[in-house]
Image (tube, rainbow, N blue to C red; front, side, top):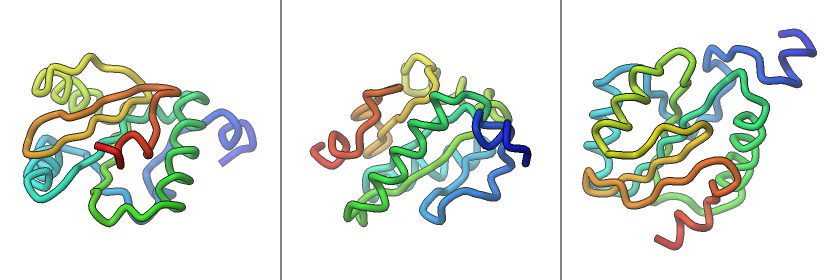
Length: 128
């Protein structure tokens, strides 16, 4: 990857994802996340891999995850450029307007919190 892509986001094929992420690449993956929400909170991070703001928010959120005890949360990652159809499905299924970057927190198959940009904060999720 070139320096320009490293600085400004470039395309991501998912190979550099942190180990706590579960990738959503299909409707079936989304349904698996919804099913997992019946056992505990699920956090879906919707990320635009070409957007510097989204990349910065993702890095900050990952730092928060790595510095906290998050055993009760399950994290899912959605690459918006490759899977915009899944983002649209999330918006329709949960009546949450699409934004990027965005988190959608699901518990018992229902959205209990969503936020975008600078409002994405792990401490708010942990307080739910």
